Image 1 (cartoon, rainbow, N blue to C red):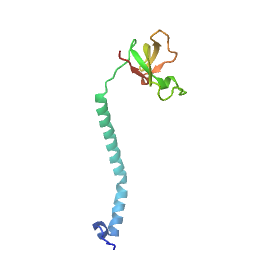
Image 2: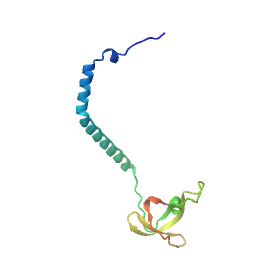
Image 3: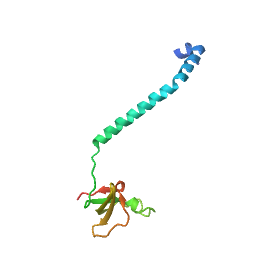
Image 4: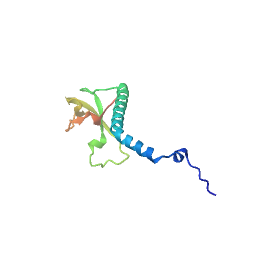
Length: 125
């Protein structure tokens, strides 16, 4: 046995009112998009402020000990998945620019390429 119960929306449907409502929505679509864009930007600013409040910047200086990302040091990927993610420690020999460093091993051998701070992590003994 089937029971046909209609919802109030189906019972009170009027095609003329529906068409008029759709036309009104089409007129307001640009305004709705602008409001949504403003809300997204405001949300992104709030998230950014929240994150930046809790970030503790740790700048690297000459003489600091750092670890280098091992994946960057081996671009062809011959390490295997069980290899350590970080290698070192290295000593910061020279700050070339902000966030760009020249490194040397603890034995004094210089690493040939400059390293970006994104691929370095401060080492604590």
